Image 1 (tube, each protein chain N blue to C red):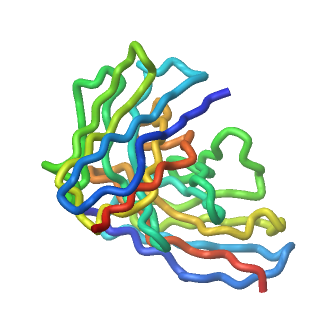
Image 2 (image 1 turned 180 degrees about the vertical axis):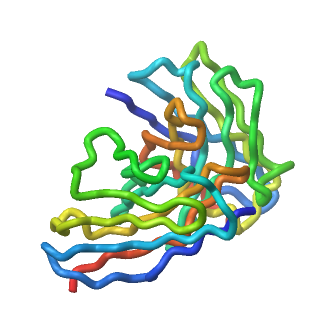
Image 3 (image 1 turned 60 degrees about the horizontal axis):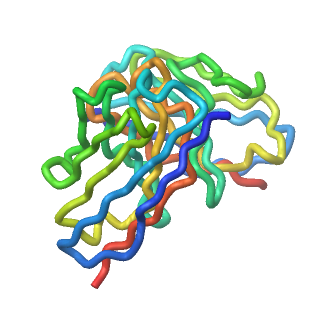
Length: 107
Length: 119
């Protein structure tokens, strides 16, 4: 099973700040990595798939990068609605696995 | 508009069974794999199972293999998750998700159905 490790666990930032979230895989997963956003009491929402492709309707302040085992989700300038938990997920090998999440909270 | 609506959750005793359903609309159901992902209270996301568009291929996480069965009825645009031999550790919100044409990219999610396993 591929283990995804996200860091940091919590990111305390202010609106307008740049957010950088990391996801490290226990083995090479090429670019088969997605990012999801989840707000309290809601379902997850797909943000980025295959490392850098934005899903439909996702604003361009969200971007993904990386390859191999190290990946980054960047939010260029945080909006109030961006404070949430973010998960990475790999689809390189079964079973699909998620990281443990990074919470982006208001400082 | 693409929509997924889960149903069938509830309270069940350890060792019991439950069947979740997920009704889909707004897309060509048979063309897409469908997945179930769960989230225990206060915890992260855990992939549970995926079924191909035709239903001939199924995949399971290790924690549910042999106890859960995923199936689908393409004539009714519905995917199911039959859960047997339930344990306290299965307590979670169960989300149904539509896979994009790229298998494993879950681009639309339902609101979830809560399953509580307790005596």
